[in-house]
Structure formats: structure tokens, C-alpha cells
Length: 232
Ligand code: SF4
Ligand code: SF4
Ligand code: SF4
Image (cartoon, rainbow, N blue to C red; front, side, top):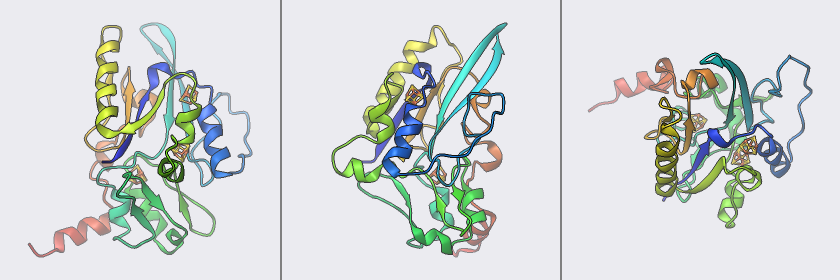
């Protein structure tokens, strides 16, 4: 059965332990950053940054409110990036865990099509055209360990396990926070294996926290055309 994450943003303190643990496990370099007047650092996901704690400040009900969103690949149930790769072995799904995995062969793909197919704006390209993103720490999971970001999270924000368990945990937490936050919701639960609980409009956290309608089909124009041309 597919594995899933449940990310409870109500518990996140933006300590960025998950961001650092991801880099440590994958031996990824730090980014050169500049002071942009925000604690969010780096500014965006990159080829070497698979996990980013997004931070926004909003005035909600006349109160300054921090919104934290630990962003990463959603390991989509029907992954548009995988479909766009046309089942080349450059991108594949691990049937045991449900992880969508990118290989060095992504260099041979049309990077812009893959990137624009993602409803959550996740993959990033290196100068040589190779594309990368979160790999669910699939090596750890196959060895009975939790993903590095989950193992390091001190607050219970990051959770990982069987999809049904994560959905149940998400529903339980949603019911608990609804009284205080009536607009709380779980995002795109039927479409992804990374389930977020947010307390406010998802667009306040990040433009792509939820798949925008314009990217909802998640399929590049090329793939959409090919699908239309297929014989019934
Ligand atoms: Fe939030 Fe946990 Fe990441 Fe810290 S480690 S930023 S609490 S998700
Ligand atoms: Fe692919 Fe984007 Fe879905 Fe990740 S979130 S599996 S990169 S389509
Ligand atoms: Fe990084 Fe692994 Fe967490 Fe993905 S699952 S964000 S690769 S630490």
C-alpha cells in the first residue's frame, strides 16, 4: 500500500529542522542567500533544495499571523510529471511506497514540459538539464526508517506511514482544530500522498499549496493532445 505524509501546519514552528535534515541526508550543498527581509530562506525550491519551509505574514482578524508551510513534492497518486515523461525510465513510481522518483536520465527529457506539468510547481532543473525534487527518502523507507524530515521534526508537524493511517490522522486533527479555525481544511487529499492541514485559505500560505485550477489537469499540452488523439 502507498505510503503518505500528513503535514500538520498548525504545529509547525518554522524551526527548519526538516529543511536541514533533507540536505544532510542527501548531501546537498547550502544555497548562497541574501537578506530579503523575510525569515524564509532560500527564496524558493532549487535543484539542491527539495524541502522549503515557506513563511508568510498576514493580518488576519486584525492580528499579525505567521503562516508556515513545509513545501515538498506531493508524490501524486496520478502524477502529471510521470505522465508527461511518457513512461520513459527517467521518472518512475516505486510501487512499494508510491514514491515518484527522478533519475539522472531526466537530463534527456524536455525539462520545461515536466516542470510545467506539476500542479504544485515542485521540480527544478540544473544547468545541464537534469531535474530533481524530493524522493520521499525512499532509501530510508525501504530500510524501515522514516524520511529524514519526519524523523527530525520536533513538534509532530511531519508524519509518515500507511496512506490510510495518515488520512485518519488528518481527519482527526481537522476535527480537533475546526472549533478554533472554522476554515481549516485538508488539501487535495484524493490526489496526493502528502496531505496538508491548513487553518486558513491555502493561497495565503503559498500560490501552489493547493493545485490551482489552471494547473488542475496537471498535464502538459503535449500529453493532453496525445490523449485526445488516442483511439477509443
Ligand atoms: Fe516545521 Fe517540523 Fe520542519 Fe520545524 S522540522 S520547520 S516544526 S515541519
Ligand atoms: Fe510530480 Fe509535482 Fe506530483 Fe511531485 S508534486 S509527483 S513533481 S507532479
Ligand atoms: Fe527531503 Fe526526504 Fe523529506 Fe523528501 S522526504 S523532503 S527528500 S527529507
